[in-house]
Length: 116
Image (cartoon, rainbow, N blue to C red; front, side, top):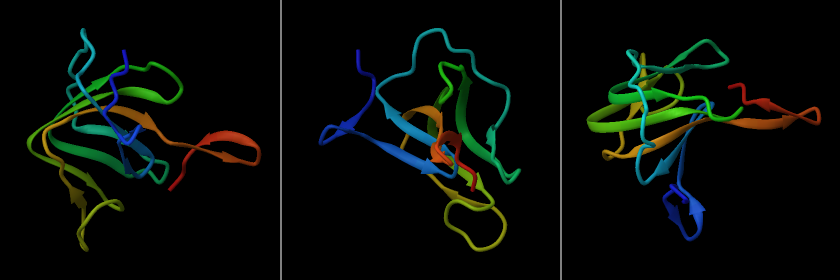
């Protein structure tokens, strides 16, 4: 079953630096909620932090590393990605479910994680 939410046949994704948030219809069964608010630390050593979200780490491939439920009043925080001039930049989404993926690119003929 395809769990992705699509628009005109394309998977809906939010790019958050090196992290892709792919919009999904529901969370997989059997996930265990993580006790952290850090989704990932990026290549420039800046953490991708969430507020009012539930993180579920589950490595499914070299790209998929988990899932996230964005609850009411959520915030996605990062020093470089989002709106804001001083300190942490932020954005929010309507309460949704996401698959967490690390973004990759072809560099020198090899598939490598994106470095911001």
